[in-house]
Length: 336
Image (cartoon, rainbow, N blue to C red; front, side, top):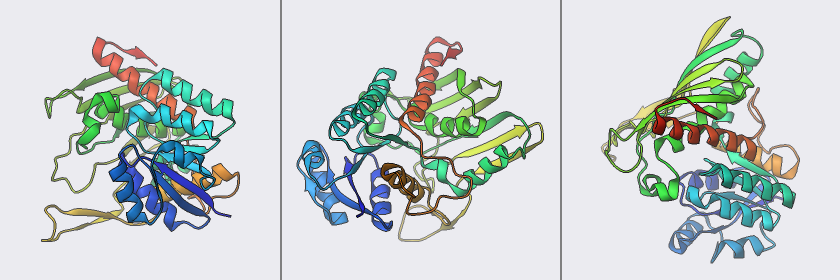
């Protein structure tokens, strides 16, 4: 019997990719959609040929859903995760896990008390370029890691992402967590201090659009991270994920989206970047299916891939983003 997954909200654009990946994988079924925006729920349900439910609770209360993916505005993550835990569903929550430490801790506790599994959507863990780098690092190919220069640039997403009452923050909240999660996995160490410069120098609005962090880890490793929304609207994709690592035995550079080609057409206003090779979102959903069922993922993971990120992994990455805001406000190093 396939794992039946419901999607709670299509507010986050990643929901579209997750829905497509569910329908492309064997052993899993997109069972339904619910959204506080009922027009959006109906439109997405029609697009994917699945039922639209009038409320989140009605979807969770049906006997047709085994697990859920939460893709709401960030501020609603706690409410939807706690509700899903109440109904005993395995949960994959879009990043960032929460907008406050208290919310993140409450979400993890609710799932532990209900005996359900909570995971965080960090698809970069499953990108084949990253899994190859990870295997090299963990096999000692770079010696002892000393430091890294990293980036996760992007185009300003607009919509609720720039409303900090719904998002919990701007670029630093949106783009810090992906790379922090990878660095934690690579170093097998936890971030302990961060110094950050965060501002709104591009759009001059009420949200931050530029951020530069210097992060120190418990084992002495340090990294810089530029997570700015600094790409123009005409840029050919949403942004990048890059890492330049230095160790005692060598260096390595990762450009996660270099495996692509450019398409120029009179039919669209800007060039398009088309990626080829393994799809990290598909591997994320496959890993979630395997974790939720306690079995093998329907799509074998790339060699050297880490396990799917837990709720605790998500909270640890969020702690860094929140500490970065404290550092930027005080002008001093913040303890994580």
